[in-house]
Image 1 (cartoon, rainbow, N blue to C red):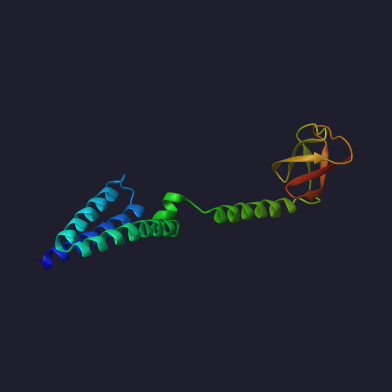
Image 2: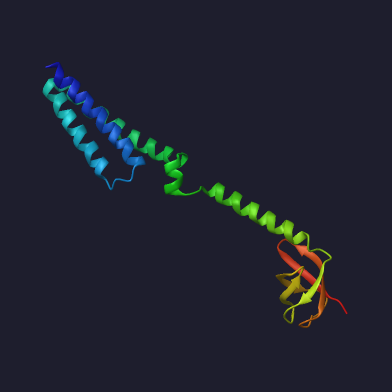
Length: 166
């Protein structure tokens, strides 16, 4: 008769393990269904051994099952598989965006006091060529004609301000 107790406890443990695996392995619910079947059969074995063991197994399954599953889901984004499935966190995306913005600003800061040419008529915004690169810019201090020489006079964040050179 002790074999009923061991089999019942083993099936409950197997059900708990399968439930945790369901959170980590995309199985389309197969692992979850297998976990439920294993738990139900384990509880039946425990009830056949002793009704008190069966009630205890049922209560533990009702409490520990959801706790284990949601704990596994909470840990999922911190694992390699989870990062692949979920993607980067909001903080990682924000850090990457800030790093990219800082790099662009640093590159644009190097344009200060450089000379170039207006590729379009700037009334007041347009496109300029500075150091062989095209940039959107705003004309400061008057309109700039197409082909006119310009000098970068200010960098305000990501905005380039130019002034026509006579």
